[in-house]
Length: 176
Image (cartoon, rainbow, N blue to C red; front, side, top):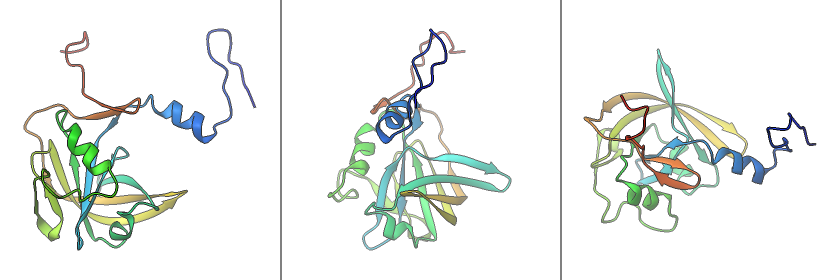
């Protein structure tokens, strides 16, 4: 089906996988790394992280059920969500790469509360208790309650936009 909305806009087309992916590349997303305890520990880059509720405090992220991290996350009681800073493109790429030991050097980390791996030097991190897992298509939405937070002192977030890692342009006219 094609729907035209007038001479100034491109026609709307069916939302197949490729056109949906192309449209969603225009959304800028915060880049996070989610870690979970295990033997070995697991971690992955996620751009689906969002705040869900402040009362009660809840956050969420999504994970592909075919991911090598899913078996561990599917049974983990706790996870950590690390918000990456603008200068952490290499860390984001490392945790997005399959078939490697993501926790080997140069990754700096330590075991945190509940045995959850905590990455050093991230903009902020949240230690969260998993409260629910909701299957949604080929992904699972993980809802979690933050129990500990190490907020950022300062810094700009790393974003994902148009298939690339980018930072905020803080020199534009909207900067106060």
